[in-house]
Length: 124
Image (cartoon, rainbow, N blue to C red; front, side, top):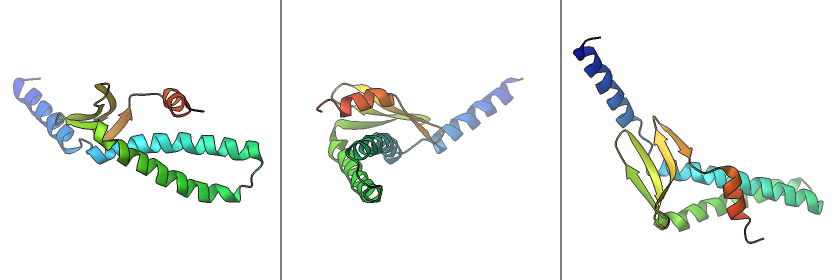
């Protein structure tokens, strides 16, 4: 390949990265979905242990969705979106650690569900 082709490929890749860089909202939505998944699993386990009916599950899902949204909104002040044009991440201001990484329209959480579950159920 000559220099012109390599330059065109690089520019195309650069434009693709810039055009598909996830927004701050996409990063927060990914965290919310992870938190919501764990909250739903924990809730279903608790309902099953208590012998509650499945009909309450739909109502509790609505409440959990509201709670997860409120949680992300509440902690937005400790989250910092960093845009590097071809990729982005969401950082925790407290620990100065990346929480999510976004590239080509996808957001990836940099924590495991087990570590999140452990932190969420710490107070139990």
